[in-house]
Length: 163
Ligand code: OFO
Image (cartoon, rainbow, N blue to C red; front, side):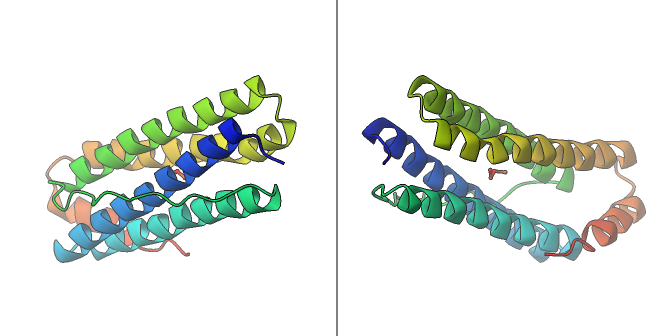
């Protein structure tokens, strides 16, 4: 059974993951509307992944006989600027999520909740991968500068992401 502190922290993280999903869905729509369909698709898949992260946490809370508490999800912004600015925002957001995941991991450690500690390891690893991927896209977009043909090539490449 989860203690109250751990349960609250996990419910808070469900909200953070759903907020990420909502933010990426907004970014996806923004890219689509700006004719960057590949980045739009990439971000739509990312939005679905974040929702998956939230569901995994929810299932975990339930499996530990905890009480779920779904919180309000604020509306995300709708305008993001250039593609570089879009992905700089993705990177910044992932760094923020990493800090939240680490905080949750730390709480599990303090509470000596070893099951949650083990469960959260997956999220710690996932964040390493997600930050690296976002950083790579930012680096490539910086590299191409304002060459629109290169931007379209990258858009096509990232649009190959499979769900
Ligand atoms: Fe990339 O945020 Fe989920 O964990």
